[in-house]
Amino acid sequence: MDLLVVGSGFFGLTIAERAANAGRKVTVIDRRHHIGGNAYSEAEPETGIEVHRYGAHLFHTSNATVWEYVNRFTSFTNYVHRVYTTHKGTVFPMPVNLGTINQFFQSAYTPDQARALVREQAGEFDVKTAANFEEKGIALVGRPLFEAFFRDYTAKQWQTDPQKLSGDIISRLPVRYTYDNRYFNDTWEGLPTDGYTAWIERMADHPNIEVKLNVDYFDESQPLNKKATVGQLPIIYTGPVDRYFDYTAGALSWRTLDFEQEVLNIGDFQGTSVMNYPDMDVPYTRIHEFKHFHPERKDIYESDKTVIMREFSRFANREDEPYYPVNTPTDRDGLLAYRELAKGERDVHFGGRLGTYQYLDMHMAIGSALSLWNNSLS
Ligand code: UDP
Image (tube, rainbow, N blue to C red):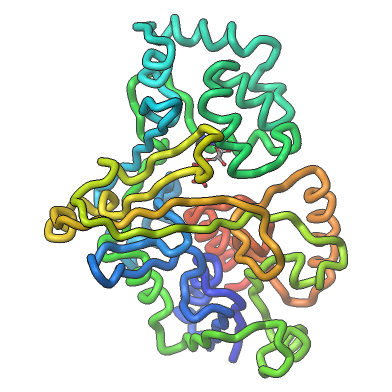
């Protein structure tokens, strides 16, 4: 074995695939019973509808290198992600665009009029100087739209004072003064034609890659554990960085998700793939209806059954799956301490959302793995 990869999400699998391709013998271990991390999906048995086990994953990128790389393992459909949000019993398009603004204010503003209105409603806040989520949100869309669509959704999603959250979280969403309601701005987007798991399995399918599932890196009763391997060979670690160091600089805060899945005997529940619920009287943040991700799968799409999944957010305990780094000022201090500790680990490379405590999208995890491989490991 030339390389040990801990965790089989996109970061780990990209390194494993590149290394295997270059002739290295790679072992990938994962604590779970499947590969792919939170991108894992499976067909719901009754309906055949592909369900993203850990919440909806939408692939998008503007990075040509990443796009070329991922297309080696899967083709992509021409799905374009659009999201709607139900506020006080009315459905609005998300992200905020001219359609949202005009519907919310029951008006027919031109782009310039809408811009002027939002500027006025943003009051003292400015996008360039906004210091946190709340200031940036108000600066971007003005106070009334912020309160309707972001304040309470964010309270449910993060349960954290929005002044302690990073403005980068809200900058994930575009604000447009046109009627374009695409969720992403990227050059390329789409869903893997035959599903995430088929894509992920093709990445791992190489004679130089051995995958071992149900293996916990911190379980010293199994041979490929931390104590036995660090310093013996290069290691890619993609689990939570605080777990690696046994929480010596404190536990970093994470959000996890709970899902309630239902198979319904109706052809269409909500007419779209994702409906957000930004109001406090609804306990979940959104409902996914998976068949809408693949309208091209005609038999399944037109069947008289559908699968929906309600998504609930809460703080993760140590035994829960971490999903979202909360990244409060306290967390950032902790992260700096872990980065210092990481520098002292011989030949251990930390990557992915959990290993770096960064809110990385799939294309970012893949892009950073390709950079690590090209710059340091190849
Ligand atoms: N957000 C919101 N209302 C929405 C959608 C998003 O307040 O209708 C905020 C919320 O804080 C969320 C963040 O914007 O965590 C980023 O949203 P995104 O859809 O990118 O989150 P993800 O799909 O990664 O959960």
